[in-house]
Image: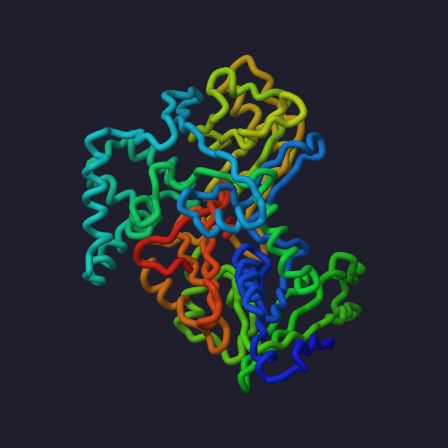
Length: 493
């Protein structure tokens, strides 16, 4: 067992040792927390199970055209994301517009296109819905708010007078925020998503970082210091005693190269684990709630917190990005094309908008949710290519819809997230958040307030630590995948 010693700066005195912190997770939450601590003079050590940093922020460049980029994780920065914009300005990262004009495709035909931010349903229902939701969000009676959250979003919208056609369209739209049908989404979490503090008419789908959102991840890592970030370190056990936190992490860098084991149990020998031990005064754990119970906590997590982590589902999201010879969609739909479909593509949008590239080539992103995400994830890449190409051929007859290259990522199959972002079912918004909110001994865990296709975190450590707040739309992720703002009843976890 290898032990990573505490910092010896300033003679290793008690004060310097007490200003040390372990951070579990090198996604935006972990990196931003570590960066804020570093600015305050803290010694930080980051442990990341993956072989890369970024978590649910995952920019991608096709080998066939490296000048273009797209996102397999968090896609949007909203107008209200002041912290993200402040960091981008600090690091010299430019933001470019990333808004789309939505349309609906039904029975293989694209219908009316709406300008970004325009209400696409019956006009008379817009004010009625805003009024009804505002009454609930502004209630001082917690009991009534919980009663409201006990119903699903579909039922609430139906009771407000949405027609059957508009309900189906709303389900297509909103399911990309929740990662599941709105029949399964809690009414309060949905209301705060669209009408809470910080929401806007474009659903915070406003900007992206020029060159890829991973540039922000890299900028944070460089300023923290790469020597402080340990990848391929899978946390196994976390001990808290005598005012210290000790983490036992398995170095999994050699696991993929381990020789195959004999089939006979008698002959099978277990490969020895390489365990490293890290110690500090505090710990910030930024793993998604679904992963909390994979760690051996000593002392153990409370039963309430353990059950909350077990019951909070994460959205099944499958992102497929496709590189094409030409941007054929622009001829008919313009550069800001996006479409909610009832086909294989599910929600599809022009991921390369605002990028010139080196030719006329362009990228579309297909964003599938729920059962469809699972179905597509089970398909081989070539099968997936053919299915989406056929789907697009119906929407754009006469065009060459065969992609040059395809890349995909199913977040529900990711061991370290088990989904794209937190999904609050009816009745879960208040009890689950409350259970996850409080620190566990000297460890602070994120309360994932991301009720939809955003992943949102706040990491906080003592009065000296500046809050690190992130909210990323993982759909065009969400990280934890990554967009967005906090809702009224939260502290932006």
